[in-house]
Structures are given as C-alpha cells and as structure tokens.
Length: 546
Image 1 (cartoon, helix red, strand yellow):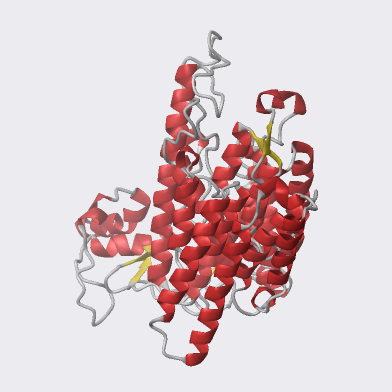
Image 2: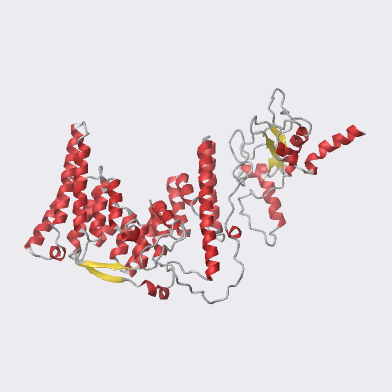
C-alpha cells in the first residue's frame, strides 16, 4: 500500500538515481504527489524542476519526465529502486494482478512485456483451473483464460505510429480491438471488475492514442485505482494539465470521502479533511485512527491535532468497550514503537541540519546555508519539538467503561445536572452509577466534575506561557489532590484512597478487604515519602508515644 511504501522509503536511505537525488519526503505528511511535484511552492522556484518532453515512438505520444515526476511515480508504486519496472511487474504478478502488470508495461511503452504478462496470466488461470472440481467454475476460468490470450494477441498487433493511421492494416487492427471490447467478459460488471477494467483501459488507450485521444478514457475511469491514474497523469500530462487534474481529484475525494486521495495530498491538512469526510460517510473510526496514528503532526496544527486525538480516543474507547484489551494494548505498544522510530529519525535529521548549517531536500550535497553563521551554536533538543506519548493507563467506570481520567465536557441535560453538583463526584459523570468504595473508609472514591473543572479553568484566564487547552478537553485539569487518587492492587483489584492505602500498609502487609489474603504490600510503597500521605500514620504513632 501507499502507507507501507512511503514509510519504507522515509525510514531508509533511498537513492532515486545515480545523480544524487535522494527521497525528499520526511514522512507521510509531505509524501503526497502534490508535495513531491512541488505544486505547493511558487512558480519561480520550479525552474530546476522543468519537465523534459520526449516523444515515444512505441506509443506515438509525448511523455514527460523530471526528478519530481520520478519521485511521484515511486510513491504511486510505478517504479522501484533505480527505476526498475521489472521489479514492479514481478510484484504485481506475485499478487495475481497480471492485468495491472500488463497495463503498467503498456503505459511505460514496453509492449512486449505486456504481451508476456497476459500470456503468463492465461497460463496461471489454466493451472489454477486444473484443481477445480465444479464444471461451472471450469468454464468461467477457461473463458477468462481465452480472454487474456485474445487481449495479448491484440496488444501484440499494435504497431506504434502505424496503428494510428488510416492504413488498411491499422483499420483492421482497430476493428479487432473494438470487437474484443464488445465481448461479454469485457462488459461483466459483477466478476473480475477491476481486472477487466485494466484490460479495457489497455485496449482503449492503444486504439485512441494515435488519433489524439485515449488519455481521458484512462484518467476518468473510476474502476482503475486512483494511484495508477495519478501516476498515468504524471507520465502523460504536461505540468499545467497535471495540476488541474490533481486539483479536481482532491476535490472529488474530499466530497466522496475516498481514502485513496491521500496519495495526492499526503496526511497533511487537506488529507485530514479527506479522512474526516470518509469518517462522516462511513463511521469507520478504526481506519481513520490507524492512518492518523502513524504521523507526528506539527505543534502549530492545533485543530488537526485535536481531531486526530479524538479519533484515537474514540477507537481506543471502542476497543475497551468491546473488552478487546489485548488488541488495544497491542495497538498502543506498536504505535509507541513507531513514534519512537519517527522521533529518532527526526532527531537525526535535525542534528544533521544543525551541523551542516542548512538543508535542501532532494539534492545531495546542496547546502544553501553554507558559509552563513548559524543563529544558535547549540542545536535544539528534539524532545522539545516533538510531542510526548500520552499516558497508557487510566481508570474507567465499571458500568459504562467511560474514562474517569480523560474527561470530556458533557452537553445538554448532563451539563445542567453536573452544574448543580460538587467539584468532586462520587459517581460516574456519564452514567451516574456509584464509583467503587475505599477499602479503608468505605466511602465512594471521587472523580473530578467536568463542568466545575472547566468553569474553574476558564475563571483563571489564560496564563502567560501556558499552552492552550481545548474547550472540550479536560484531561489536563488535575485539581484532585494526590491523596484522594485511586490506588489499587493489580493482583486482587482491591484499593481505595491513596493516603488511606499508604497509611494501612505502613503497619500491615495483607489486603485490607476482609477475607482477602493477598500480599499487596510492595517495596515501592515504602519509598513514597509524602508527608501529606503519611500524616495519618504519623498521628497514630504520636498518640501511641503519648
């Protein structure tokens, strides 16, 4: 997929060619085709990226090439390392996508490779058919193998510029291809839809390309992968037409919530809008959370960071509600590991940039800041620029599984109900069910009142130098004293107020709950040298001494 392909390029030292061009993207944020083609910068800065126009004798049309276009083709999966088309064709055929393999070969001007790919596909279908037992499936497979064989013969009859002329042989060839497109297999929308689409696109492209058309039929064929259509545009459209086509694709993807549009935008601000549109139309919070969790958004993207955080919290809450604890834990661990790798990569780049005095992505050895004094002799610490990984453990209600630490503002009736209560609640703010009781004092444990905490924070006003807290995020408002925090044993799950538990285990080693013989005492609790927590134990000792 595009995500895996880009991440492998960003996390490895990849040379696109032997001319010193290195992969310019740092991650999924700036790995979109729009950014790789540098449409986001001023036109006068595009002079080094001028396209080289080449007339293809095999296809009878112009093709365009530049370092930026080659990067875009790599992101779309059209070329591999050192522009090896054979590697991409082999990868497609390993997945059984012989039709796409033939299409890529045709669009690269290698007609012979396309014919060989379709013949291998027909042989693979026949080989697979040998193990079939049902007669109906046998007939369908044999008919499709015959279709692949006929398509390879039609493609082999293409003669480049001669096929676009009105010579008798060209007319006969175009009629043969047109009759092939009228076969039932080429118009079956129920089975092999995507594969047939690639066969149709090959034939229509070759029929019309010599007559001045054929590009639009491929560019606007929605049955083809958008990734392949974008790569096709990067190869056959001049820069102005390419920019217009990509702009229209971004708009359609945003309107329809089509996730493949991220190939064009990357996971930047426009990409997050596409994700939000997809979520609004499908309700699939899992996909949006998994995609957005693979990037570290810049600090100044306040609204985008808040939206992605909401997706992650919703997905993790959903897993916890379904009691899929292991899946949620694996998601948190894998995400933390990925973020550590990204932070390490960014730290290396920032240190290298500070040592060089400047950095220009995409060109090795080019240093526009060379010879200029650095604004700071000491490089900035990477951890000051990168967001920290949030806490992975929180307390939840036993009844509704709502988080009691990552509080959110309640709306409507719930908001009016919370406004009449005390700052510390002895029930869940969401379902109003009672919270567990302390094993020592037998009183209900308390949690913060979201409404009162928000009101108190707003009353304080903004503090100088303090980060802004979103209006509906109360996870950073911690006015509950540590002595009243939840404390429990991970073995027997019994607990209570922190200062009560510390006071109990100052004199006991066994769980305070009657009938439980769990040895909850541990060495670490003796190291909690907090006078406020140990005040009760000290008072008892003073009374005993008196």
